[in-house]
Image (cartoon, rainbow, N blue to C red):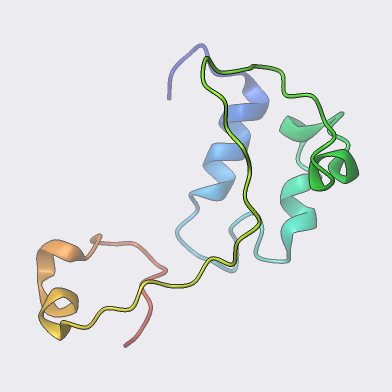
Length: 96
């Protein structure tokens, strides 16, 4: 992990990448992630209401949309069966 990452960021990343989903940060809900030290000082109500001023403003204008995100259907079963499309050793591969 890059040495310029803060200790709290390194901790967050490591806990999010635990292979066993029952031991992974967030298994017990989003509050578990939101309460991590990395997010200390974040007012989650402001984030939800889109009233929090972002710490960095990009050079382009982005307008958030309120859309429902749906899983992309896979109509070709061969895609699912191709071993190149599976992340080896990942513990959260959904059974088909």
